[in-house]
Length: 473
Image (cartoon, rainbow, N blue to C red; front, top):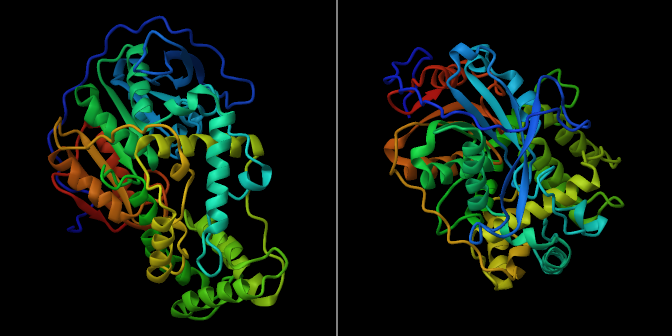
């Protein structure tokens, strides 16, 4: 991709999308324990099972902040959260508040909790606290996954027993259908959306199944969407993402004057990390193991603000001290996130049933990407999932050319390699802006002026770069 300045020549302005008359949704105050600063909330009723639309229904919690200047209003901008399993009801305030005024003037900013999540009929597998607080499936120090197999089986059995009938209907395709029901309830012929992380896959599937209902589509921090390798490849790609991102941490952790400096050379940080992890594998310090250190690495790489956590854990390993506590959400949140994440990935696509397949992948990834030690290839509850999965959607180039992809060059969670696959699948429909930063989440989060300006111009005017571009800063 060729580097271009922020003043890149843009394509023609997209035509406005007229809205139908808005139905009488019952907008009111948001729940008392949610953000309530100019945000209003409602519910939208949708079928639990779209194959039986006359059957049971569920309610989706939906929120909005109306356009600041109704005379300039273009329509709605739906914020699609990541995960799977992340709520989105408060995103109009917590994320939408960062939007430039020109964007807030023109759109109702819409949030929602996806089905099964938050306030949209939440599900739980009622896992043991020991299982739910350690959701990462780290292999044993020698690469063995026997304990992970037992945990994955417990997880699947608990979900089937405890989560209720909605469990088998939590999937990407059903979230996409829900979004179209939200569009209809809002009275919009077309919908614009800003999708993040896993939400980019949701957004890409929506733009495939409901191409004619899309206005301006922003996909930020993109996941791969190949139906032949869905989810297993998305997860395996994170081993590449960790390797892509680690040099940013190494430069920071060796910087003179840094109070958390671990060594005096960027080149020395990686071998030091691997040595400390191996040392803890051989001789744990109480519950401080090599996987504790690796977990800190994964937790700390999404933004530079997480670097001190990694460095402090390395220093504790080196000096024989206690590691800093890892941030942990309340148990109810962990239970809900775990259930929705498992249901989504297991209902989206068929998974291998052979334990040997996962063991082989773990050993291969440990050799190729030792920083993540085989975690991205490990077994998941889907190996024991009893329900028939959906047939994955093949994202394609059929549809309007109205998609802007935004991607960090060194994203550990949604790495560039996956974004490039999605870019190829979308073909002429998309243009991609890659920013020369590390971390997860780009628009208004990385401080990349070129990338931010490209997105704002797209949302306000419909202008996109005439070709894929690279924004150094």
